[in-house]
Image 1: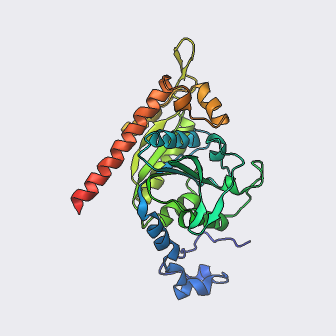
Image 2 (image 1 turned 90 degrees about the horizontal axis):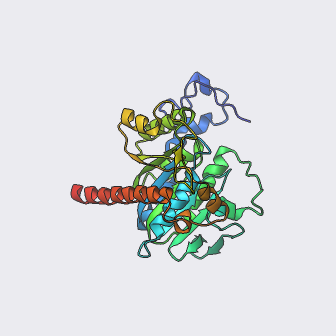
Image 3 (image 1 turned 30 degrees about the horizontal axis):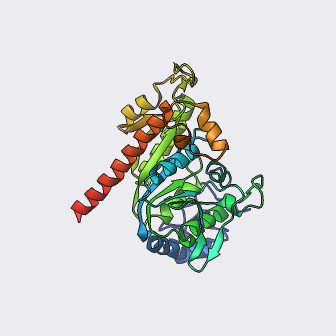
Length: 318
């Protein structure tokens, strides 16, 4: 195992391979030669591959268990409900791929074609790609270090035959680690519309989400807005709302106000959402008149409006 010293200048630094902390490092010669500063050729290849994708949306959360994959799946379903739109959902949560189950695609496999890997289709206009399709069993553990996970993400972006897409939604793992840096780096030659940040009302979640927001700001990733999941419980019978996770610090609404970010909506906790995900069905189709479904659709419309405005801004600046 190679331990990175705390005073390592980094591979992109002008001092790479030249400081005293580099002495004894097996990569010292490579860093000093400047080879590590060269851009990854895959970035240009991915840029060419993604030239036929109109909108790229990342779904992020600083914390696990806040409903990020659930939101990604329902965003994909809602966008694909317009039969004139081509939509794809890419699951880059390498160690915890839940998208195949949520989309009702467990047991499906990826096929190789002359133009690359073929994604798995839910409908004619909704494609999905996940490492879950490459595992022999849903219970298989993916025990990989960072470089191997990054290589898998690169392969998904470069080698999958996405075709022409109106929307590509990227479901990411929790945190601000390797996968996030890789996806932003590999898509740097494309047009990322922005990120949707998912949280829950309690402060322990908001604390991690603030870190995710800082990450977006540092890597210059636009933030479309914030979604508060599990925002109260709506009883399916009496329709009364109860606060299961009280927003002790004001919830996402107060955080967005403090950070000058749009709050896209508050999705109430509805047990039928979890049931739909377990059964691989769209909650929006199963219970279209529920309060949660109506909030979802309002959020999706805000995202569509944001993407349309981005296109208008880009056209006016050229």
